[in-house]
Length: 156
Image (cartoon, rainbow, N blue to C red; front, side, top):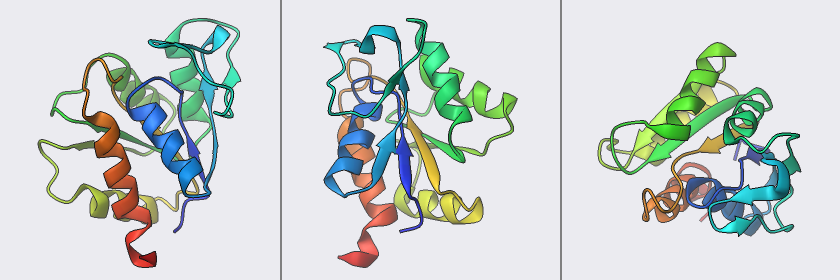
């Protein structure tokens, strides 16, 4: 595996799945979350090693997570980026950071695409973003599957 750290914001769905995956596979993790450890299901658990931003707005943590990583992958079920996922791509462009969007509905081999993206951009710190669980209930399983395919298949 090439990545050394997963960065994410702690929201339910894609963020939380990425952090859980990192912890389950002994990959370092960190990231920024809103003041008060705010998420749609309440307060983000302390087991997630996240720093709070001074503000409660989600976009502040989104930008900080883009800035603090080498590259970003946005994972979605549907093909269209919206909300925080769209903001993530915007911040990636503003900060000149590589960004890859993987959609379960569109991508043919998302794990392989992510592996090649990480290698091409020599990514050590990967920001993982995507929709919250209430918007795309199946996103957590997709994130887990893609990260496993990209980084663990060789070890199996």
